[in-house]
Image 1: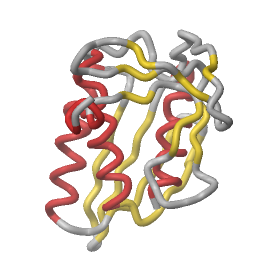
Image 2: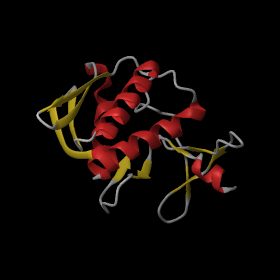
Image 3: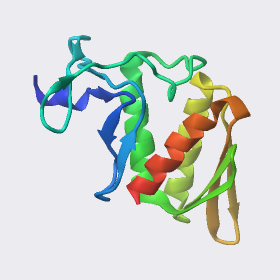
Image 4: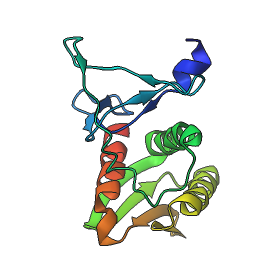
Length: 163
């Protein structure tokens, strides 16, 4: 598999490394499988002791309401990881259904957050993103209905691990 194939692998729910440097940031999502986007074939999942494990098809963290094609999902995950890793300065879980992210107060960051929010609401219409710029600060609020709290939990964990 070439570099583009490696970059095109999508980590699905299971135990996968978080986007950030924290040693304790292993994200646990039920049902792991990897897909090589060049070939479209599934790849085996291995435990830490390199024994092949069974991968479930439970994709609870990616709701059925999501219409983003499978081939585009790794790019969207990477875009979120870049924003979370490069721009988030603070994280606050305001409510079970709402997450607040303090972003670096820069026009480029606000633009990236707005573009990503607009793209995400096209495929996952249950999200509500609110970008606020006031008093030299930039904030991004992410809200979901109660039935999608698990997705917000996963996003909050990715944000925590990216810092």
